[in-house]
Image 1 (cartoon, rainbow, N blue to C red):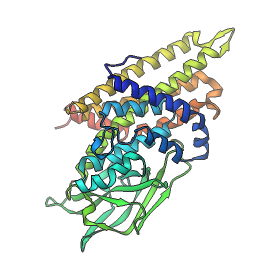
Image 2 (cartoon, one colour; image 1 turned 45 degrees about the horizontal axis):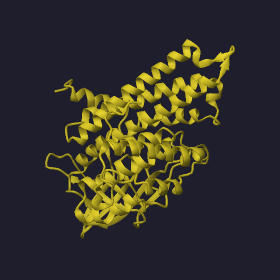
Image 3 (spheres, rainbow, N blue to C red; image 1 turned 135 degrees about the vertical axis):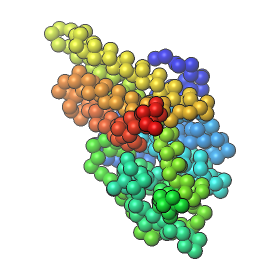
Image 4 (cartoon, rainbow, N blue to C red; image 1 turned 135 degrees about the horizontal axis):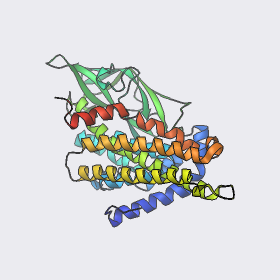
Length: 385
């Protein structure tokens, strides 16, 4: 694997996370998936490694590293297990990110040290039962009354929101009407356990079965006015910025998942013999593996470029959408061929490739579907006025 000009610190991070994933996650990944268990133990261990708050300043308890380092860490986790990668990705991009980039100094000091240390997890309450790709269709609303926000509504498919570690949710809500008659959208921090705030774990998922996904309900939930994130009416902008950053992490999950599935297929093809020789020597399989390797390399180049643009504080939205789109769809193609190479065994839960096959699908849906990414890209390249 090329190092892409990685620093010694980034190479060491990759090595450490890979060793951790192989030693700590791999032996229990299948059982956690089968039992739909969110592992607090593994989450605490990942936090102890500094995987929460990777890009957060050391002032607030973070590691102070760049975004490419964060993406490398997620990639290495996803190479072994999508569920644990999802926990770290959501904790950083969707949980810590909004508070770090848009929070007041008081909010940062209150939450970031605990979040970076893995004492608690934060979630991002965006998606609703009737508002997915059309985030502006949100119905959750918040009314300011006597110095308190009164929140009513619901959210769905929210990662890191229901376990014992769930500490706070950034809730996007309608807080009024703007001068142009459009909805005024704001984000408000709501601690878990606040009266009127109920979190219910979602089960029977096809994928990421060991990650924590929840439905959130707000029934006259009251929080102080100072829990507003940033300024009133900035919620939509905050959401778009958060998703831009999050797309890089989802892309990393696609890249890492593709790498993991490819390695499983290559190993199996070398060991499995038919007609007296390893099936990797059959051109049909050799070409499948060659295509996998090629697409993974192309995906890594695209994602790392997007990260370097962000780290250089250059426009990166187009490349983030491209990376998210391409890496997630590359994983889809890779896992499909990886299962094909495994034959009937690839359909059995005893083989990890079956889990990779299920886990990939969310990557083309979450944090903006592939269709939405194509809209974003087509706008960026000038297809629309």
